[in-house]
Amino acid sequence: MGKLVLSMFTSLDGYIAGPNGEFIPPDWSDDLERHWSGYALQRAKRLLYGRKNFLFNKDFWGAAETDPKSPAASISYASVMNRLPKTVFSTTLEDEPGWNGTVVRDDLPGAVARLKEKDEGDLFMFGGARIAQSFVALDLFDEYRLMITPNLLGNGLRLFAPGFRRIDLELIESRSLNTGAVILHYRRRRAA
Image 1: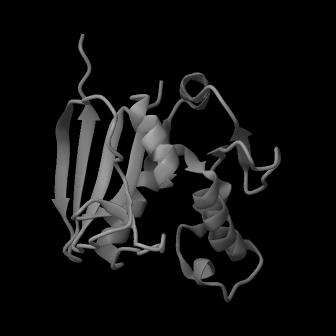
Image 2: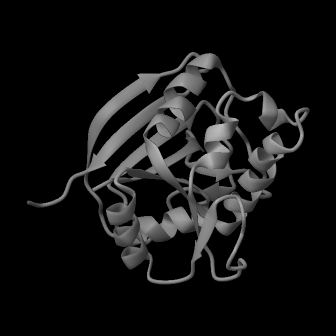
Image 3: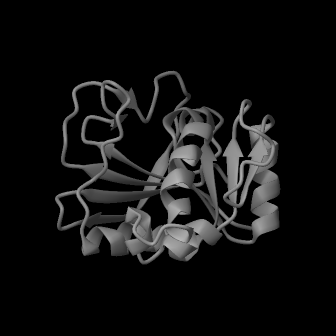
């Protein structure tokens, strides 16, 4: 059975979006591509998203299939992003969202359990914040793979919203990148 992995980046002060909700990507490098994107895409059998992040990624990556001049077309793993099955957690998105996506509207724990059984591989959630916060509150993640970027945003949308119960983790790996970012990879420690 696969694991459910939260794979997101956050500023040092815990924000995944700026004060006006703006997307602030990490500085990119071959090192980051190899140890961040490459790591996830070698292991992921399915990608999980909230509605907004799904639509953002669908527009960006989907263009690689139709527009050879799009920014996504020049990225080596664009075909993997477009090929992988996706699950979108949304109550407002249409039933057939395209981009190899299926929609789940309710019963998050049941949907995750079914996907883990079905896919025989790891599920990687790339965002957004609201769905990640819901999954944290339900204690659904088996692993947390976070990239801490060398930024202090001071305000914005936090990855971890207050109000969930304590979750204990054990460190699997920490890796410094040549961009100044650090990847922290934790496993959920559960009582035996």
